[in-house]
Length: 400
Image (cartoon, rainbow, N blue to C red; front, side, top):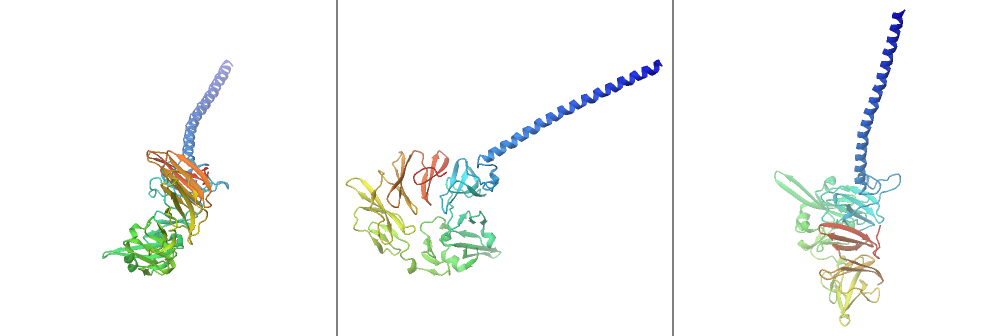
């Protein structure tokens, strides 16, 4: 009996010890789980930090989704705009915080419409691409308002030129190579990327000296269906490909140039005679049928301006410009911006509308460049090698 009792007590002791061991093992597992969750929390913090860095570019999240519709709400641009274009057709291209590998298209509220990956396209603080009638020249491609970029190789060409894009035409080079050399051709496409003028070697040879110099050229230009090629001194009809050595009658008076007695046409014939105004000093080129002309009254040391049309009519009696010395004039369809700066001094800017009314004034020490287009002032400041862009309304209030 004693042996039976002894065996029962031993069994109870062994069972109790085993139960204690199981409980101790569970505590160790929980401790291990806590350590693991500590690592996971650390990883989550790192991920959150990465998202924060990206969202620094745009409000609302990762910059890779910039401009996407997030529950019906589009993202707004934020951070420093370090590269920029002018506004045109209500849109502008910008890069943020020095990251020139990404370019965003924004509207006048600062909302991101789409993002482009164009790492090699940006030049210093300026992006020269702007929309013209729904299309923009991006690098060597044509971008539509949805953000789709069509490259020359996508449509059987080698290189695009945007000189006639405002008229809905794309000058396109086509180069093919073989063991026997290269064949260089030139043709004209429309914005649906259909050949309007089939590419030919003859057309390429007729204007080849001008082709390398067309981008942002002032001396070569497009007017009403014709391209003037400065280096080759000829005109091309973009609808037919015909080459002309003299200006066609239809555009003879479209390209007017200022001289001290008024405006002359391509042949130098005076079209707008302003010789009666002895104080006339300068005039801008005509844009959309209007130009700004300036007068200087040496008796009082003041400058005046008005807006003129191609019939020579003044929009208003010339008004005084509220600056001491004007060294640049910037004009868009409705406003004129005057800049005044002495060497090493502040930059002063004044903006007038085309009624002669003073709209805004601005003074700054930090200045790189300024322009106005589409009713929006683009102002770039420079601090050593760092550039920053600000967009203003004509009264110099922030655009967004």
